[in-house]
Length: 328
Image 1 (tube, rainbow, N blue to C red):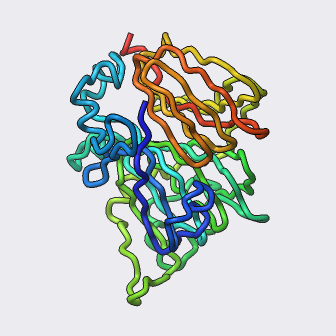
Image 2 (tube, rainbow, N blue to C red):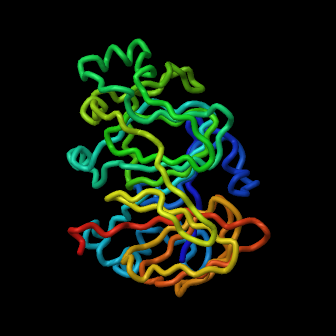
């Protein structure tokens, strides 16, 4: 098992909560994103500790791709790691944006589109997210809506609290609102097309670039979805939150020693701790995982033993690649 040095991003909307959330007192200043597991070119995760310290995720995969990724993942994606997992702290609203689907991304020379999922970890009172349109929008109206700022009035807003979760398919216009801390699971892509950024400027007085030409082609103009995901959890169990063709995410809760069986997944597993602390033990090693930190398990780890530490319940997101019909 491996944990990686986080890759910090500092956009203009970033806040100051991530360092405290992760227990990283040495990191100062605003941080918008902490990339926990990444194979995005130019931002590839590096092992933080253990015998493989200093190795890049690419190198781990190249050493034994089938063992790390799983047979069906390797067959479908080759040696490309298919997921990007991150934490997001929005001090102010993110831009209104959209992401490309797989076909559009391949036309741009990129291997993956960007379907994603959010789980809210913390939110100030009154915080909200925008996901999808209230009613279908005409493509011919897009430029006017952006130029006047009326694009904000076309979106479906949902009030959020800790645990609120959303699936954001490629093509769905969306925005994370101010005062929200989010775990984001997505395909390995950094393709974001900004439609509207509230006319704000950076420290040099420059407005951020918009990507209207690409956004026009990416948007699903009839998408009026975007309601929160409905799921339930219970102590000492793993409960499904989101299952898509691109990833599966469950909520893992442990109050006492428990064992998870991954024998039939044929996939790597990512464990992102969002509460408490626990010692994790598997064939690939043992480590203590605390809130705000993430571990990657190879597909060959058939079992994971979890031993919570302290009084708080251990809570984590359990992420893996589901088998599709074509993988069987």
